[in-house]
Image 1 (tube, helix red, strand yellow):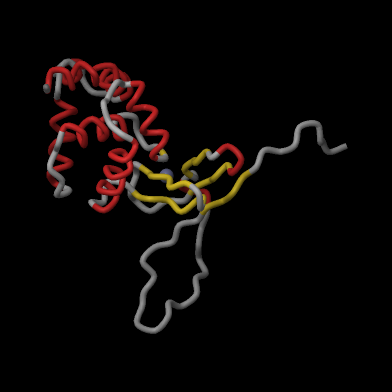
Image 2 (cartoon, rainbow, N blue to C red):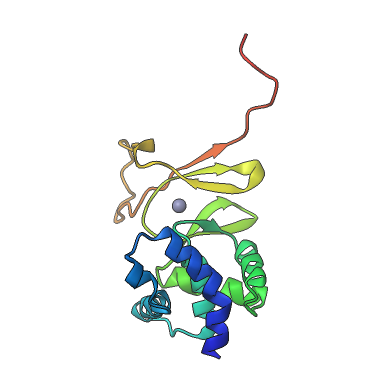
Length: 172
Ligand SMILES: [Zn+2]
């Protein structure tokens, strides 16, 4: 069972190795990133089931990104990971509750999940449903209202909505 999982995941591992600048000997140690993922799930209090490992591999193996359940489901189908859309939804919500993902409130009709759970700001290209991390220097929030009595501000996330400029309209 694990062998078939590994063979499904190998192309992703190749991507992971190509992007991470690890020494050749490390990169050649097959299965290492998978055991890292297993540890990460355990530390977050999640049993590393085959489905969680497969989906976690797809999610976390390619750097910071923003996905909907449908996008992850499509990737799972392409990688021949046998999961249902309902399982993808459930897993994304479990990962979010465990603090491995952050759910972004961008669009009422679709939930986006961020593989970088730390606080940061986003650009949202509404027409294309594309989410981009804002550069670190992109925004400063220096004037916030006082929190209501008995409460404190837990975090601030800014979403800057973008649209493409209409083609052909140029300043004279
Ligand atoms: Zn982000």
